[in-house]
Length: 102
Image (cartoon, rainbow, N blue to C red; front, side, top):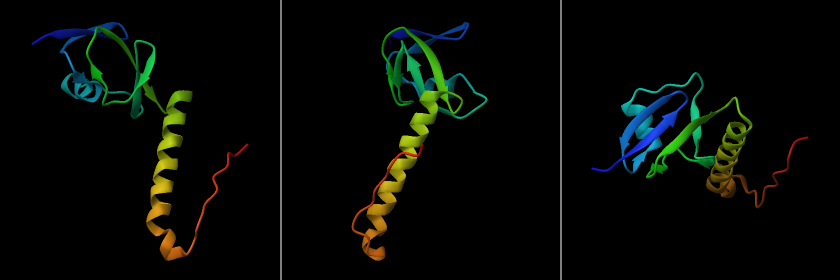
């Protein structure tokens, strides 16, 4: 099977082409001090389900970065909307408004 080179910090790894980032982390036992929310792959933001199909430089996104906070915020907003859709008839609420806090 074809392999690609993954550069993570000062380390380099060889993985099978089309390996997902989450599988790469698990197979090499890679851990981060904070939970990993996504990754920067060759300077582009990607989900942990992204397949590594070319040689790549990878940096993990966690809560300590602006990008990580944004991912976390969007995930919470998505869950809130799904919850609202599930219970709005029981609460007899027809609409919600989400605005930004300053």
